[in-house]
Length: 82
Image 1: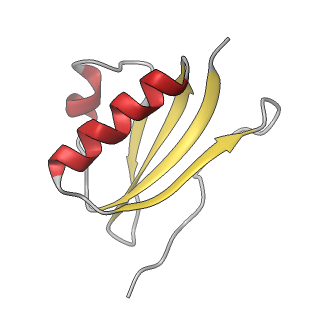
Image 2: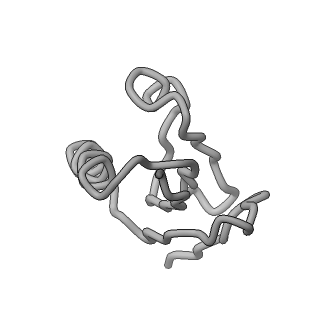
Image 3: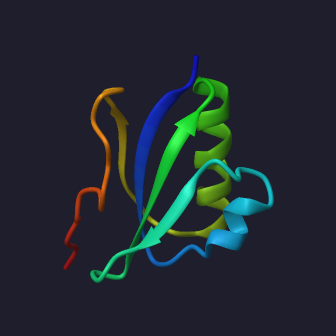
């Protein structure tokens, strides 16, 4: 059973980058210049694979959060950076 995650990175990730290998995830740019990536991730191995791909982009990782099944992420958390 997959878990729903929200991941925030500093910088922008285009939805087409995710669509190539993780079509179920949604990348949402935020006004702060960050990107919220949200959706179901199959297991810990898949989560680590995603985090590795983000690392390879060189974008700072700001948040990784597993969401409760009943919580919907409309806009996700807004993380401000200095």
